[in-house]
Image 1 (cartoon, rainbow, N blue to C red):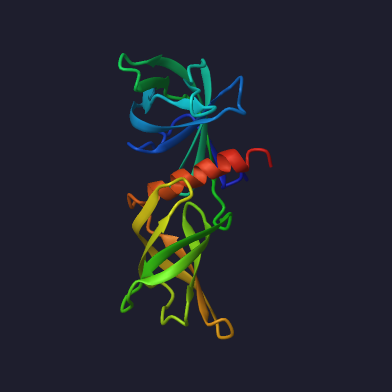
Image 2: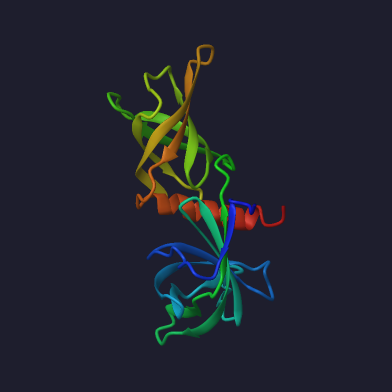
Length: 221
C-alpha cells in the first residue's frame, strides 16, 4: 500500500486560486527563494503570477527569470511541489508567465506541526465580550491560544479571532471551531485549540505566513 499522506499526479489539476501564495526558487540556486501570488492559470498551458523577485537588500531586488523553477504552495491542508519553466515577463513587467506543470507531488501537512509563536490578539466567543488572547502556536489549519480567566466555552463552539502576523499582515475575524480545552485553576487561565474554517478569505493570510516560515526556517532541517 502507498503512503496516503503523499500523492503524485499527472492527471489531476492543481488546486490553484487567484491570490494564492506561491513560493519559488531557481533550480540552479534553490537556496534563493522568492514569493509571488497566482493571478490566473490555463490548465496544461501556463500559470500567470505577479513577477517574482528576490530581495537581497533594500536597494538590490532582482526578478527571477531562470529557466526552471521549483515551486511550492499550500492549500486545504496539503503542500504541493512541482517543477515549472519561466516563459516570459509581460510588457508591463508586473506579471510573468510560467509553464503549467505536467506532474506535481502533494504531501499532507501534519495537523500538529505547529509553528511556535507569541502573538497578542482577541477572540470573540458566543455570549462573551471580546477576550484578549495570546496565540502560542499556529499552522495552516488552526492554532493554540491562551486567555486569562476560566472561560465558559465548550468543544465545537464557534469563535472568531483577530491577531497580527509577524510578516505585517493582520488576520481579522477568521472563523474557527474549538477542538480542545484546558483550564488551569492555579493560573486562572483557559487554553484552547481551534480549527480554522476552511475556505475563508482570511485563511490565505495564515497559509501564506506558514508557507513563508517553513520555506526559510525549516528548509535546512
